[in-house]
Length: 133
Image (cartoon, rainbow, N blue to C red):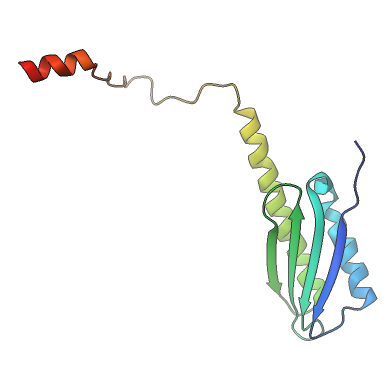
């Protein structure tokens, strides 16, 4: 399988994102390389980059809706660190959920407790007999 590169786009609102900030974010987003097969594009949207920044990560997946995480912190790098942790956790949970679903295929659904028998459904004939008596 050919590995694809994930495109990272930077967008600054009210401020310009410096090359140093972009390098830091790109380096930190490298942690998400484990999920490269499921990611297509990552958008880093930063507002007021130099003064109490609000950063939003929009992670576009090959299937499904994009994951969105938003965070405030004292610096751009601290905010990016927090966001990468958040998105990593979301992707890991999503992957575990997918693995759990595929493991359950072909197996019978778990039944209730074995010591309580399920009530039998009333047949049409039984219902007719009851109504006639």
